[in-house]
Length: 310
Length: 199
Image (tube, rainbow over all chains, first blue to last red; front, side, top):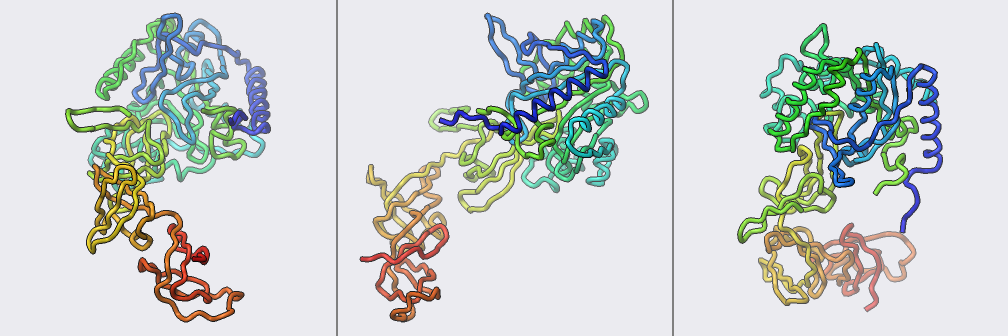
């Protein structure tokens, strides 16, 4: 019977060091550490995120896919900038770089935009890393142009599907919509060529998630992701604070879920009420700590950083 | 397994969440075996399963990418231990040692395995919809040498080898001292000589 931890004790100690350093970083920068429930009555309605349900005391609750909604309610209540280290759950995600239960650092900065938040992420990761870090930034549009010489604003869906068929043999692009084609190319073709710490920013507005639309360019959202050697580490936004727009996005999510034959999720009215009461301009980001630890220690699978994994 | 059972048939299917090495699925009308399965999701977007599969009819290995959560038809494929009986010039005949049921496999199904098939040996026969599509010989077989150059007496020290034809038609490299009529043990996975067998 194998009972021993997957991760080496040295890795377990290193995680403790990283967590201590994260707390020092945010405490000295005036961020408040918070703790929100893992189980809530509503959940993320994003069509690409599946939530796990739990029955507790005859109530159906959802294991949170990130602490985002609860943390935004704290922000609306006047908490000021906040951070949280905790676990999050995503149903059905399992692989070398995915586990249905994972560790997340999420933080929100009042008064920041997404660019300032990228700056702060660089400082944080540099302070956690044992070596010199260099960061580059590229817009989503420029990334596709540079990597594939593909103009995502001009290309038609048919042309894009033809590119998918050419670049990813064995894929069936006829069944993919425009954004799914972009996801396929980013995941299978572009990410494996990305090197070092790289921010990808200004995602197409169709992939805005909970980010606000750019004031300068209505075709993009103020959203970024941080990659290291093509591995996604973090996802952040200038947060959408408008309750009416947020409701419209939840409704669009549910329409997309219906089209895909997925269960619809009840809209989180408490979040919308919090936005209605007023959420100051802010930016927030979620950073996957298991993957970050893997990257910091030069390991190549979550198996080497998770204490136990069934 | 997510079963969609129609009357009389067993049209079962697997979700990508159930993908793992060895799972048998239908791809483009052919039964295939999953060799490798990788979950790919670059960020918040659509997740994909990239799989490497072997077409069990042609032996070809190919890559395939599915949207995660999709379902794929299961292939009615089973591997079953059978005893090799004889070759009638066209078909190789096998028998289930428990039910005595016989199966006839054609050259396509037997492939290169015919080089190692010796009567009475236990093989693994891959059945698709009840008919053989593949034959895996035992890992080790013991076969007579039917032809080779004359042996060099006493020359057991030097590491030289020479080709020898075995009773099944296979040609393997054997040490110089072996003679026609002697029996050798061969690893069928590599086609390499292992040792001389004392009869």
